[in-house]
Image (cartoon, rainbow, N blue to C red; front, side, top):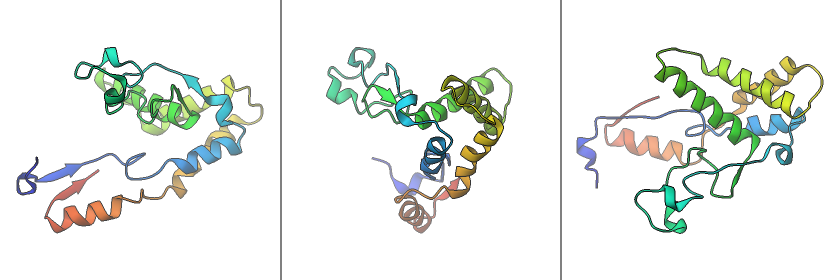
Length: 160
């Protein structure tokens, strides 16, 4: 158990952790990217207990971190989940290679790919901007404010 007195600060990401990405998913549907068209099968550690080093059964393995972070072990991911985890993956890979690319640039590229693969016609640039405008309406997850207040009360600094 962590002793709060030894914690000096907390670093957390913003998108999908502090703020919900649901508005982006809604806008994906608005431009014609339907969830049923975007569901893809995948294999993750949650779905394959033998790939997990510390557990022996699938139920326990559901507690593992999945590479597609929000798959919930249902063997498919939605378009929003696929887009977001692909952007994260490519951002990490770019950084690991010693390069840099802005989150937005990677996100725009993958949205264009999704629109093309889904056979969406029309102005893809406008569709991408419509989807990304969902960030303007992103709201905090319900547990964020109470958690931040608790950390502040304990004198813990939070950085994002």
